[in-house]
Image 1 (cartoon, helix red, strand yellow):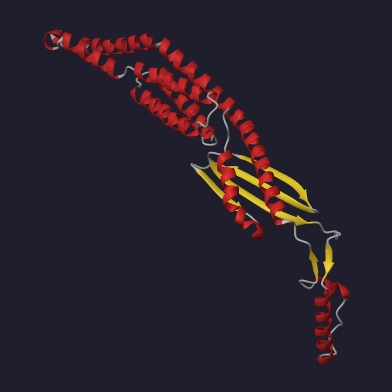
Image 2 (tube, helix red, strand yellow):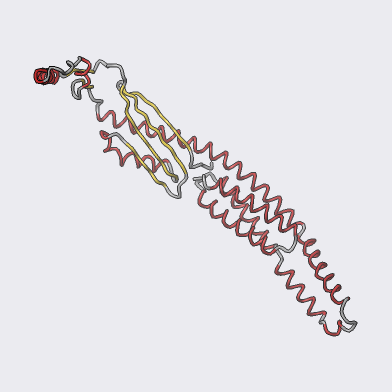
Length: 296
């Protein structure tokens, strides 16, 4: 299934009264670029987390952020360091004696002092295991989101491939008519030119040479080869969309090739029908290329 590089996933879990939150954002990138943010106590998991992300994702700029939020309510594990409280009270009394104009400290002020209230730390081994498991689940969620988005992008691209095929098929069916139209046009020009010249002009103009030049002109303006290559590239686009493998780079290359053939088609055109077809193809190819940039 075709996969998009643009998606978002968020996973919240709970461990010992703490909220553990993974957030992963994925956007377009030529390669796999991982930006990982972990709390200080989990820095040792950096390599393991990056390995999991690399195994689950192939392309894109990945911004993965993990945070631990403690509950505002006091848990049974909450403790007060009374030694710190006693030392802090003694210091406050000394300060009040030195400056009686100061407001006396409140109990809440003392409780806010760093180190007075402490939470028992989550078991490190358990936290590490829980973090990696949650990351794997969040990656799975992100992959599923990318696949859904990729499916929508693939449908849009396939619709434009069908439109391109119709334009190419219609042009291929009219090639003989277009070539005959060009030949007749030049033949009329030659006849108009000779009609206004001297009666003996036929003795000067080599009719065989003139026919040869018209044939060379028709060969230079023949777009059959470009139409064949357009058909071939469109078939390859469909193949990669249906292959179920990461195809973004291959499709990006095919968009360049399609655009090159459409440009050549327009450059060789001496007929309005061919010119219009080349313009329509370029518009559709540009629309496909914009969507392909999002594919893994």
